[in-house]
Image 1: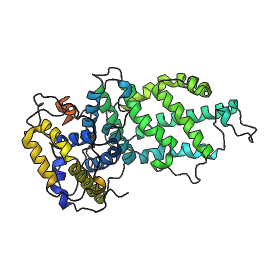
Image 2 (image 1 turned 90 degrees about the vertical axis):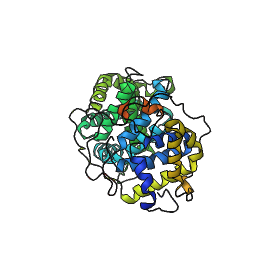
Image 3 (image 1 turned 30 degrees about the horizontal axis):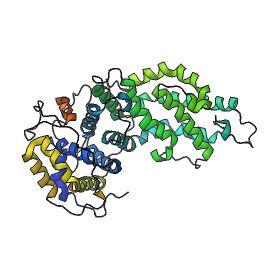
Length: 402
C-alpha cells in the first residue's frame, strides 16, 4: 500500500530523519501524536514505527508514548484500550514483527480446526438444522478441545515468542506498576492477547496465515468462539447473562486461571533473553524512505497545531528550529495531510528537565518523558532490546542514548 502519491528521495528528508531519530526527536514526535485526528492515527503510527524500527529505536518510541498514556489515564481498565497512538504503535509492531511466530504457533491450530469438519457452535439459535450431530453436548466437547489445544500451543511456545514483544511486556509492567499496583496481568494481557493473539485467531489471513482452503462461515465462527474463551481467560472474567450459551466454558476459565497467570509472569520476565528465535525481516529501504516522507509531510500539515506544543516542550528557539526543519521542503502533503484534532492540547508540566535531557530542551518535556530520565535511555538490564546487526538506516552511525 502506497502512503504517498509522489515518492521522495532519501536525500530530501535526510535532515528531518536525523532530527527525528536523534536525542531530541521525541520532542517532535509527542506534539505530533497530540494533534493527530483519530482517523489518522493508525496510518501515521505505522509509518512512525517503521522508521524507528529500521533504526533499532522502536522501544524508545513505544516506551515514551505508552508512558504518556499511563500519565493521562485515570483507570487501569481503560489503559491502552482506546484508539491512541500508543495502542496503534503496539498494534503496528505485532503486524510487522509478529507474523513468523504466529505462522509457527497458530497455523497448525487453524489448519486442524478447519479440516476437522466439526461444529463449535454453542448458540442453539445458530445450529445447522440439517446436521443431526449438532447439539450442545457435542459442540461443547469440540470447543473445549479447541480451547485446550490453543492454550497448550500458546504456553508451550513461550521460548519462541519474539524477544521484542517480551521486552514490550516488561516495559508495560515497569511504567504502570507505580500508578496501578497489581496491574501486571491486565496490561500484559491487553498487549499480547487482546491486541495480538486473539485478533490473529479470528482473522488469521490478516497475519499472513492463509490455509490452503478458504475459511467458511462455519470455520470462522469456530475461531471466533475459541477467541472469545481465550479473551475471557485473559480478562479474568466468566461468561454471564449476555452470552449465557457460553456458560459451559466457564469451568475451563476457572481451571486455567492459575496456569495463565504463571504464563503471564514468564512473559514479562526478560532475564537471559538475547536474540529472537524466529527473526523477522527488517523493512526495505524504499519502505523506510516512503514512511519517513509520509511522517514529515503529515507534520508539515499539522505544524500550526503542533507549534504551541513545541514551544511548551522546548521553548521558542526549539519550536522555531523544528518549524524550519519541517518547512524547508514544504511540498504537497497529499495523503499525509492528516486531520488535526479539535480536542484541547495534552497538559504539559512546567518543571525542570530530568538529568540527561538534551541541551536544546530548555523547558519541561512532555509528561511521558518527565516520568523519569530513563525514558530517553532505558536501563539495559530490563528494557533494552539486543542490538540487531545492520539495523541503522543508510550510512548513519548509531546514536547514543536510545
